[in-house]
Length: 200
Image (tube, rainbow, N blue to C red; front, side, top):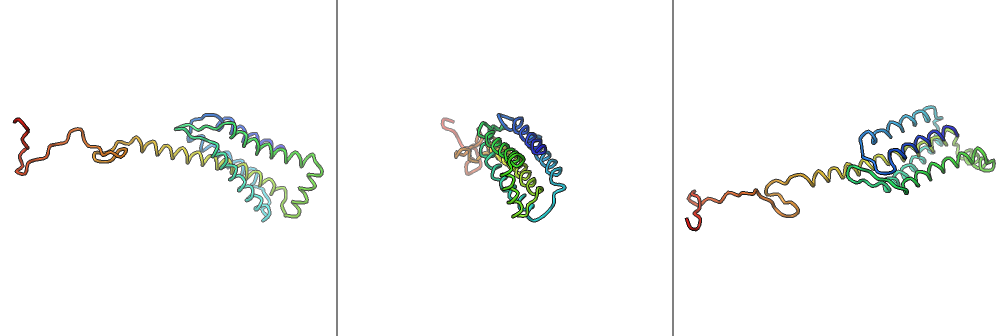
C-alpha cells in the first residue's frame, strides 16, 4: 500500500503541476515523464517474477493505459505554444488513481474481497508481481501516451503555423491568388526596342 501511495502521489503531482491548467509546451516537460516513468518502472518491475500470466497482466495493464492515455489526449487542447487541460482531464486522472487505491485498500481491509481476488489469481496463475505489473504498466503508459499525444498536437500546429507564415515566391498562389513582383518589366517589341507609350 505504501508503494502504491508513493507512485500515485508522484503521478498526481506531475498532473497538478505540469498538466492541469494552461502551460507552455516545453521540451523539458515533454521529456520529464519519460525519465520519471522509466525510473519508476525499473525500480518496481526490475525484480518481477517473469511468468506468462504475469506478462499477460502487464499487457492488459498496458492496453488499459493506452485507452486512458488517449482519453487524456482528447481532453487536452493545444493552443499555439500552450496546452490546456481542465476539470474533465483532472476527473479522469483522479478516477483512475483513486480507483487503484480503493482496490488496494479493499484487498487489505475486506476479507471477502481479498478471498475473491485471491481465488482469481490462483485460477489465472498471476502472483503479486503480476498485479503490480498491471497497475504500474497502466499508470506509466497512460502518462507516456498523453505526452506523445500532446507532442504530436503541438508539433503539428507548429508546422502548420510556420507554413502559413512562409513568404510566397513570385508567381505562386497565396490563398488561391497568384502573386507577382510589384514592378513587372514591360515586354519588348519584336525588334528588341522598348515599346512606345501613348503620347511619346
